[in-house]
Image (cartoon, rainbow, N blue to C red; front, top):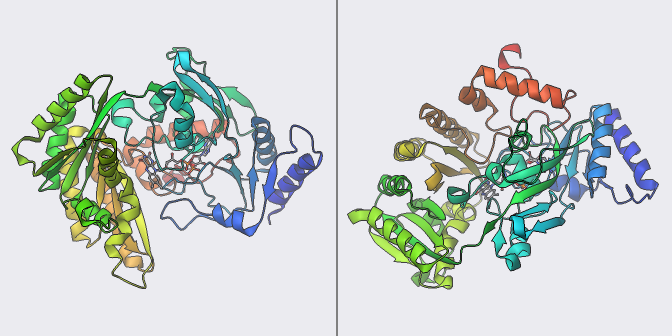
Length: 483
Ligand SMILES: Cc1cc2nc3c(=O)[nH]c(=O)nc-3n(C[C@H](O)[C@H](O)[C@H](O)COP(=O)(O)OP(=O)(O)OC[C@H]3O[C@@H](n4cnc5c(N)ncnc54)[C@H](O)[C@@H]3O)c2cc1C
């Protein structure tokens, strides 16, 4: 173990041994199972390293202590909430560092029903928060991976199926408490829904992937749960036909709650897991929408716009008539990621990884990029379902690759890069919601240009001069010309 990490752990252990009310509950874990669990997130990257220790924190004071000591000793620290990120954001790439596990900071500190906001700690899961808030009739919209927690969701500026109506984390977080690299604690702003007071520090930290500070509390904007809703699916002969309809729906301004595309291959994958033949879906590209509002009429109006936009090209159109049916239709989207490998289950004795990648474009370019991507996948001879948060012009490829076939993995990462470059040509982004981590560092400068990257480097050096917070993520500290 490096001397600096050893010194850090000894100093932390000394604080724990005092059994003081403030530091007695800090936990330093070095057992194999914990280290192994924190060596990987849900991404396909293999560069992640085993940490020297996992330090599980229970309070802001713990985080402040850990960072002030780590900063003095220049020990890398990576915050870890649920580890569902998809670009190796929550793991170390320098093994002489520690993981800061915030998952045990899981208190809902306050719910201000009258102001439609709540204050939570970073280890609160979005699913648990929904359950907690249910009796109030309010909810917090962002819905990424099922286990994800608020700290990590701030880290990646996640979104999900509800971003079409409610926006991303950046649109739904009012304020943060953050511990900076040297242990200083700051608040980014107050709870008012609007403020013109100074720089927008809240948005500076959201999406910074734990490279600028550690979130200890977030004040979240809440929305009222729609009282009426209905799920509808429409199936089309081609991906482009479905994307044209989505463009039309977005341009109509109809306020759907969700607007997704699931391609035919994805449906084939999901079908492999449905036993009852009567419950299987036709293997056609599918648009799935949820219409929701405060009245039956509001929902009917959205359904009518949906049916009208589908036009004559639609092959099947199904509206759920009860909750059970709605749940069955939604299961299609929910199972997409987990079913993908079933497409290659006949290739026994192979171990598969899913290379997940996402891009986003202005809605008018959705058809073009989807058609081009489908062609790239075919040319690269890859098996890759496509799912899209189509209303946002955002889609994912789930490339199922043989873990032991470097040539196939290379073809997948080439498609990933080509998709991203095409999205940039269309004035889109190399990632709509998964973030940069290590997987898209080489694409970020292409997207934003040298000037913006230098400004990010200046900010990073000002906030974290010793580069202890998640080093090696988002961008390299020196510009490529200096490397
Ligand atoms: C099946 C599946 C489906 C998914 N679907 C979606 C989707 O629809 N939309 C979407 O956006 N994403 C999706 N994701 C990706 C993932 O769920 C999101 O990126 C999520 O925001 C990560 O949250 P987490 O709690 O797992 O964070 P982690 O993976 O633990 O961490 C994410 C980043 O945040 C940092 N971090 C953690 N805690 C803090 C803190 N307290 N302060 C500062 N930084 C911190 C970490 O260092 C890391 O850089 C999906 C993932 C899976 C596996």
